Length: 336
Image 1 (cartoon, rainbow, N blue to C red):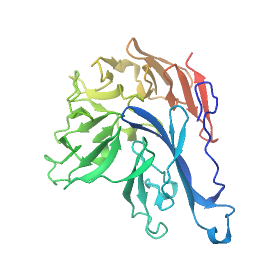
Image 2 (image 1 turned 180 degrees about the vertical axis):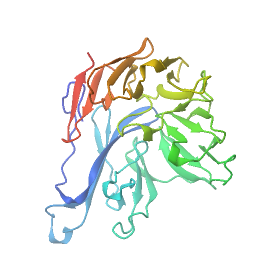
Image 3 (image 1 turned 90 degrees about the vertical axis):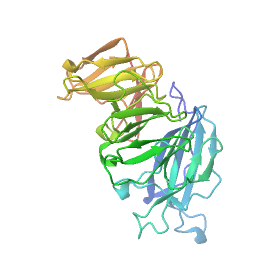
């Protein structure tokens, strides 16, 4: 973990794992009660066992790091838990990006698909907690300390299912393949059974209102690169889309705190991908050019003639971070 100057403020210990008998380690940013944590999980079989009795046995570490670089290992034995599988089980990752939920495989070689959430991380206490229960509901995730549940699908497309917390819930279309729910750092955008959308503050259940709110859906993550996000890291600025009066999709940036919104001029054919807390937006055109704009004052994107990689993220002071697809490295470049 580094600071803005690139100085290392924390480095996790090495487990000396056999690369052929280990799962790709994962690192995720987790919010809880407004505090920011980074969670690192790694599991595998060591190249050199500590003793003959330990040969072939997996070892694991689960470490919670706060924003200052202070690290706390989770004391519970996490070697029983395996990553939550992606579509490709062989390249499964460890956590969902929001909650640090852990799944367990009783026999991963035989029952690779048989996984269930069994624990969820509390980053403030660096402990693993039992999955919360709510009668008649299924636990989905924990976001900023709020547990989200959903009801079974009714089977009626006009009714769908419900999604929400212990205190409130709302109907939703329950179509997981087409992005009917998007979770931001502190909010949720839901596609309703009638195909309208609503956004909710997860802590209060209040509807987030702005012009176009009933038609506006956050960009589903499946339409973006894996490292892009439909919202700024603090959840205040959101990339949204809804159809205009001519039923043509228009793209907007909305400040969920103030309600301010600005449309991206469709004449520029700009597809936004990542947005910073400060309103820096990067994206591409349909022909692959890279563009940048600044919300809310400079909404006309400036394009480069040649394609460039899009940043994985942008810090508040304009440091753009780029992921190398071939080397395990990130590079930081000042915005200017």
